[in-house]
Length: 159
Image (cartoon, rainbow, N blue to C red; front, side, top):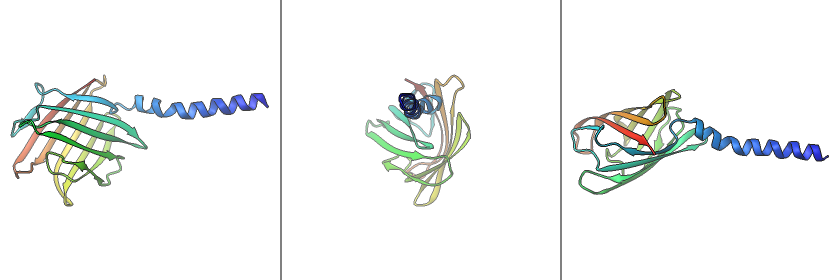
């Protein structure tokens, strides 16, 4: 009976521990800070600062963004995606005005995202984490809230 209890306890610990291990093996997960010097925003200017926190959530991830826009206004928004191509709500105020996002995984380090406002596509992004897991590059094209075409490259360093 004692051996059975030990076996059950070990099994429960293995299941509980697998969540954090999955998060560690997911290259998207972590806290990332924008590197303004390596980023390019067309038309500019880009944000003064931006921190994105990525957490494992089910079979996807949850993103939380906090920062300052070029004029010093606070920026805060979040969303969760499951990489199934389905639209997910964005909470807060995304600078592009998007209210939903969908994502599909290309490989373990890369995914494509589509941003929508009122059901209309207003932008696309390719998100790629470097093989060493230290840098994420987000290449985005679309239309900003003022109706201007955008072509941005945002570079984030893992903290």
